[in-house]
Image 1 (cartoon, rainbow, N blue to C red):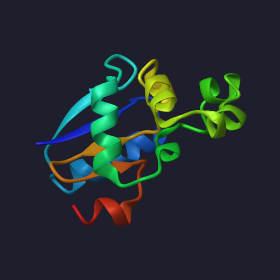
Image 2 (cartoon, one colour):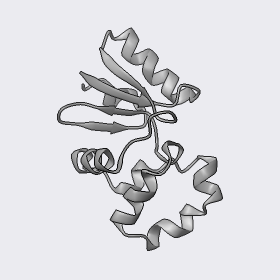
Image 3 (cartoon, helix red, strand yellow):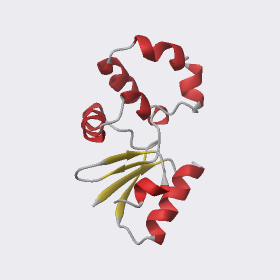
Length: 115
């Protein structure tokens, strides 16, 4: 079963959820604000995704901006970045769609179409 990790008030998450529902794809829904990803989960997803760790940050979020992460991330180690992401779900780019052998970050319809 796929895991769909989102923030229900996020319009991108709503579009992704609608796409999954319209395509009759079953998933387990998880609210990222209520149930923040753990450090262990983030490490697993990062390794499975093949993406740069920077792609896991919600760069348009208020928390990202208030912490001045645009300037701080380049100086941080991967371990420091992962630990920071684990502190607050609002720092994590969403939605996340997690399968057995893939992790999609954000919503791009063409990527979802390949699952």
